[in-house]
Structure formats: C-alpha cells, structure tokens
Image (cartoon, rainbow over all chains, first blue to last red; front, top):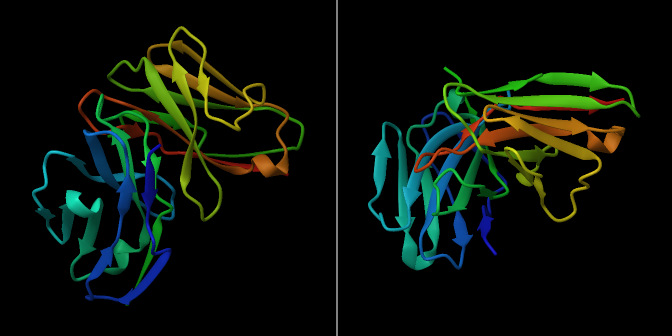
Length: 116
Length: 114
C-alpha cells in the first residue's frame, strides 16, 4: 500500500525566511510519480510539480525548489524568501506510474503561515 | 482557464435532503474521474473512482448507497450525497486524470448540512 507522510503539521515563519516542507513516501511500485500541491484558503488545489521516480534531478522554479532523494524516499520542498501569499496548506502526493494522473495518495498536509 | 469545472462551489442543505455535485471536464474526455473528500484541517481522501459507462469503484469504508456516482458521459460525473447528515459536511473535490500529465482538479464543493 502507498503512504505519504508529512511530519510537519504547521510551520510559521516571518516573511523572507526560507521554509522547507518534508515529505516521505512508501510504495512497492518501482515506478511512480510524486507531486506537490498548494491549497490556499479558497480550497482549490494548485499544482506545483510532478516528478517521476526515475528523475532524481532537483528542480528549481522561481522561489520554489524540490529535493528528490530516492535512497531515503523523500521529496522535500523549499520556499525561498517566503512571502505572505505563500500562506497555504501544502500537500505532497504519490501515484502509480501507469498514468501520471491516476488516483493520488495524499500526505496529511503542512500548513504554512507566513507572517509579515 | 479551468479544465475541470465543478459545481456548486458551496451548498448548504437541510439534514435528510440530497445534494448533487457535478464535475465536468472541459476540452477533453475523461473516462475516469476521482472523487475526494476533505474534512476540516485534514487531508484529501479518495472516496471513489467514477467510470464512464460502468459502476463506480468505492474505497473501503465509503457507503455506495449514500454517495451515488453517475458517469453518464465522457465529460460529466456527478456525486449525489443522499439523505445528508451533519457528519457529511465536508469539502468534496473531483479530479480528471490525463495520460502522462498531472490530474486536473475541480474547484471543490464545500457542503454544509444543517
């Protein structure tokens, strides 16, 4: 069975600080996809990134960066120079690789509060 | 723009009544759609997989007679919460997968049963 663990339930930072969100996963599949989604107070899910299990390259997109380490089954997410607009709940998720858009197993989510 | 449209975004209903939520894929066909439920301050949990032209597949612990799913066309899946009770109050969100792409999510429906 697949499982995603986000150990941090809530993180509070002051604007411009960096914040790293941890994500650890379990799966028996040899190929799989990992995702990060942002959920602002309005509730919709905003897609941030998809990574397949064969691509361990780290990725940077603006102030966002992701560190995928297959050896430790972790897919951590860092927001650099945080802003108030980054305040949201962030979910890490896992899916089977048969189709990247297949059903997702979500972690518990990490609520990020960025204070001005 | 949105590629999956979900309606309504908010609904308040009386206990004992039924509520229908629609999830529509725009500009693409979705033979499969997923329905998730999210209780306040909790994660999203898959409720069921909606299959066009066949019965939905429900996750363990989800009552199929209470949460009726109909996927009558390649672009529309509906979730009906029958005889709703306050404990059914939750955020319901659908997604439509796309091959080799991330799933597209609807905007979600916040259901409050009073």
